[in-house]
Image (tube, rainbow, N blue to C red; front, side):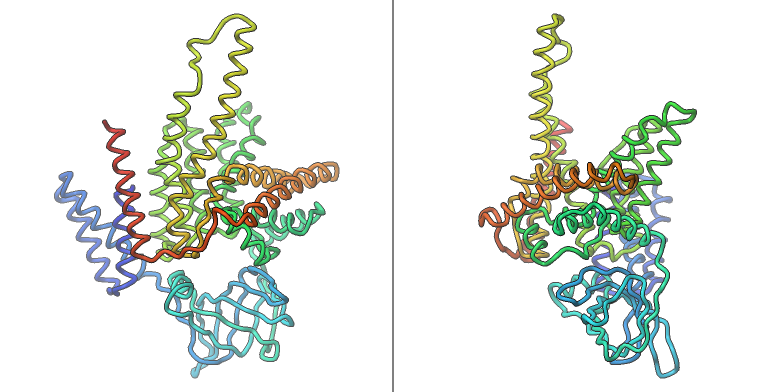
Length: 496
């Protein structure tokens, strides 16, 4: 699937620069597929399949173009999809233009926009606002180019004097579940900072995060913890399987546990709003859960590339989402760099069970040494995985955000552990909000989230291992080319 993913991405990138009629891209796809069937030789078939994936990426761009926003000032009906933050009384949200007034009447639109609303407007999710406003397009470089490639048409400012009508809409069931989960977290009575971090990490509710908190987490190298990603889906995967440990004793219990775990993973993905990183992780963990139930081998890298191909074919604009790229790169680096480093250390550090002593005292000492070495291996595994993910994403983070922080390697394992404890305790409380669990859940969640806050604050205020550095496009491409060559060299060593 890696051989299929590379030409697919190339087709999407090329289609973003040169337009081609849909029938032209479809014709190229059909000819390439036919060539693969006719030739049927390894080299020729691989070339035809690569060409087919290239044109498939081109088709994915041309078939689903981003809707264009109306030009000029006019009356528009705007639907608020998600409230991102409330800064100084202003509301920042994501939404779409449902319809607008045109010369011939009312026209439907569907263009995605970033909404800024004044203090007096106070938007809510699902609300429909009819107002006289104008869509201001983004600049053609930097952040504006990133938003445009994601399919966001521009920004809309809602002034209270120009709002004509407001109506509450019906929220989707996933957003209603998110509001219920956020309300249950608020009942824990946590510190405001701890509550904001817990809500962001657990259910993706980022309205309580302040710019200062985002800056500290960025300097601390753990800003990815504030956005629900594959790491948090992994926490949910572990928690669900622990809660369902007894199901296999029932008839067809392994099947039922598999179905319930996969359903829970995708419900969690829906509650968080289906961000690309969560969709990728949910698909991978679903395949992993099914492979455990079917007792078949799970190829992590192949599943990762297959998931990326399906997501890009469904929506080619996902390629330009920062969360998708950072998530894919970090997981790929963990699989190809971090896991081999951990396995090499495990083979050298862990004592062989074949040489286990037989006496009680010797067995006790052997078990104690094995436990200590397991703890060291766990620590080394966290450092190796964090270092691999940090190195792989560092050029892209520098290119997109202009910051580089090495604290992700030094403090990453401790931050991940604290976030896992906070998310786990909050998730159990959300699922079982019984009164006698509230003090324990509040203490565990508050202690973990408070410890994470203290760790991030110490890293951010240290003034070392974090600095501003914006990498250019050529430098970023060169860095990832070098990483690809290094990975191919490692693969050649493995084959030998």
